[in-house]
Length: 276
Ligand SMILES: [Zn+2]
Figure 1: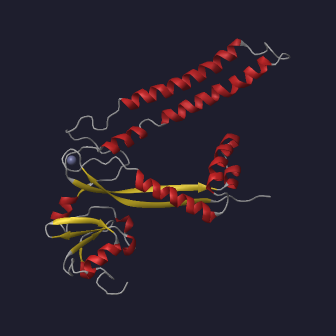
Figure 2: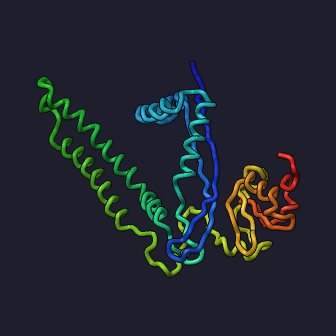
Figure 3: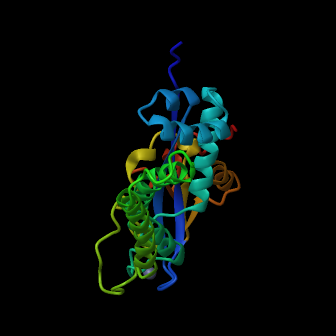
């Protein structure tokens, strides 16, 4: 029987609000994450081979088998956890400093290919080494494995361990803030940070965040200008409460994360209406 496996992917983003440890300025960036879950069948039928299937089976077992709804719920939970707990290395737009959790995150991402290489070398050397050891301990087959084969497999294992150690040492010496305060290129793949003060000072001209989150007003994260200062982020319902309680008036400016510009409260559909 051929059962096609299910692969579920969920994507989400959140606005991270950061206070710079170096210059105390406040900035925001949009963090995007994606999570996938694959059912048992897909893993078994995939091109992962025996090891891949075994590894994937472990993941799938923990994620609820083949029910796409369960897979989706699990992916969403893990997505939300990651959005809440992790960060992107986004330098302070005012001074270029990376915050402590970002330094840690960059370290985690540093030369991850070495982990893959180390693991591959250890499997390539370790598996034959085990088999040869078994052959050698069996009295019927003892001595049939050449010492050269032992040495070759052992060398692979040692190379794998060395790769791990090298990565660990390089990672320890790696500081993303090296060179501060002179300008450095942005971290590859990381989103852009926007100085909250600049957004507030130049409403109308600001294009602080990508437009990927436009459209669903009620799911957005909002910012608003109150007096001289910008406030937020707040949820849609919190923003609505501010309008209802008279803290925000029709001509006050609000900004939805992901939209192109600041707009007046009165121009946002549904914000000034009394309904829920
Ligand atoms: Zn700063």
